[in-house]
Length: 201
Ligand SMILES: [Zn+2]
Image 1: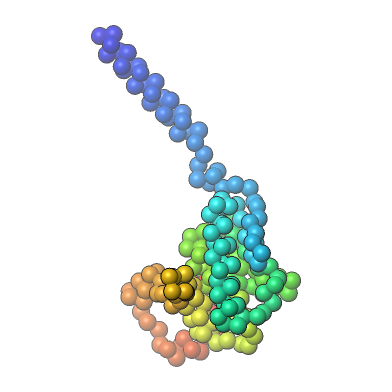
Image 2: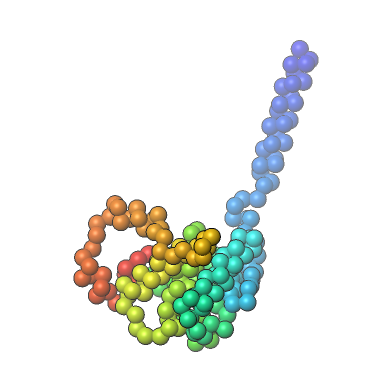
């Protein structure tokens, strides 16, 4: 009898301790650290995300930049550092974004190139997409919206391979939209003036 009671109270104690441990664990929001900057020679990301999640993104951006420079003759004002901002929350992002429906945007400020992302979800795709907009902007000219967005999507899934670089890989999210959504007339696409009307970025 005593043994049963002892086991019972031991279980109660363990449950209580477990609950205390769970209650004192930080929530997902609390895991976000203070604002900080992570930098490489050509990019700087300011966010509250774990730097260990940020560094691979910057590494991929530096690699993409070198691909553009070496293979496409990209010689723009690339010596100035690109500032990338990931705001504190979706609400904060929507307050500064030209459209709350886009997942990121590029802005060529006179003093610096700026890329803003809504969050870290699909961040690699978003950064390469926006960086391609940056490249096209510095190449000059007024690109049609369909060309601007199409080129950004073309390079957004750029990857290293054993043979070099692979570009143009279809994005699964886009494919599912194409497969399920209604297609719009090509005349509408080629006459669009704003890229943000064409895609979610
Ligand atoms: Zn875009």
